[in-house]
Length: 128
Image 1 (cartoon, helix red, strand yellow):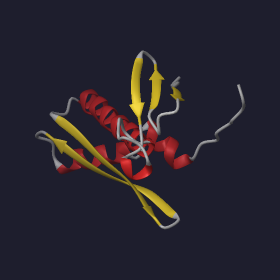
Image 2: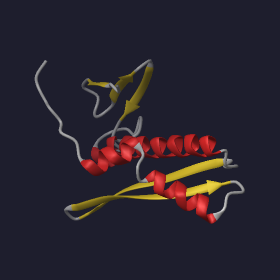
Image 3: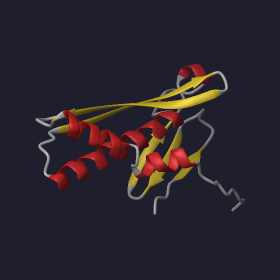
Image 4: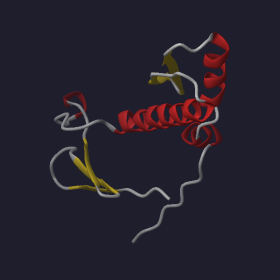
């Protein structure tokens, strides 16, 4: 299953991430003391949901042989006081009808990352 390793040295707050054979950089923006060398952690979270949504909907459209030419998932993490939520806006391109688009929106509610976020997740922490 998925695995990532993050390492940070003394440079605020540039973090090297290795996942599979990919290397990413995360950082905070200058407002939080970083240098904006990469996406911030919540940007990575919203990116994961956006990617999972787009990939799942592309797979679904291909399986149904619907003429979808592009799928866009615009994800915003919103914090209002002590409450937080995610807004997701889908744009489906191609000659598909409203019922097909509605079905794809229903499928978006059941993508793997969506279900993980909605269901919550136990995190077990230990020292290595």
